[in-house]
Length: 360
Image 1 (cartoon, one colour):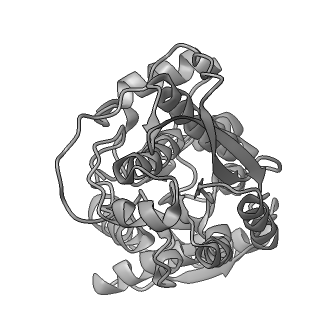
Image 2 (cartoon, helix red, strand yellow):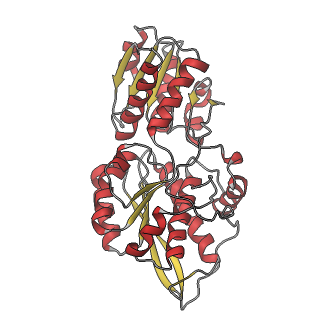
Image 3 (cartoon, rainbow, N blue to C red):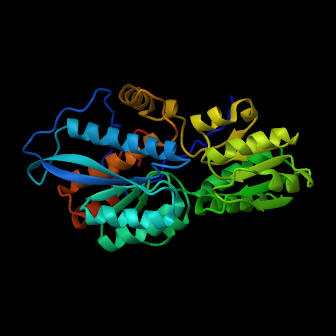
């Protein structure tokens, strides 16, 4: 089993305080049919549902759908009318250009708000589309700081950003792993590069300079060239800014080349898929992910039971955050007693919500 260390960090506060609620508890059984007379309100979801990281997108979609089902079981009323929420899912293929097209499609279809996108590279360009349309985008896990630094008042996140993750990872590499000669690889995506940059800043603040920095792209499967360059620098730790589908072959190649270097990541491959792909070559890998382990989340155990009962599979990675992103979006609509973004956006900015992952 790969060695995992989890960042115990607070879920990012969206806004100011008000009355605290009890954590939302997902139900395990299938949702009851909505009343025929209920108005339908569409919530958009956008993420990678095809390609080599479709497992992550599907996990997010499952979390969002479970939230929708649980909300509908409570027979919500808004504006004096019974409403039924429905999830409209779109596949952005983890591609920035596709993400823009997907965002426009969701807007044109009349969604009241959007949960997504998965990564920073898609969330950044999509954010402008949602802002221009005046609807909320709640990103479950887009950790790149540039996403919210665009200044759009319609952009939200429920997980912390890479400034925190990179800083913690750098401290962990030096203080806990006692690494002396550190090399960095990133996949040139907004997520991977941004995380690597913050990791390097953390090292420099501790007086540590990296021995090498190499670059790949998010389609690379053969890491021989970059690892050969790093091996010549005698690195004892290799930090990778990327995701599980690439981290696994990278881990295997490190072992095949006989390199005595620890592979480390700080988001993107704390997943079951990494374990399955890497197999025994995953032993010794250190991966850090923002947030608490599921069994330590306030509503984590109940969520995990509900997820497994509904989907008959394990949580891949980020489903609890997609669940909370959906619940907090709808909670703002209920608080404002309106699904009109002009009315619920102020409530969302001022929300105080106790979710599965923690306090938002």
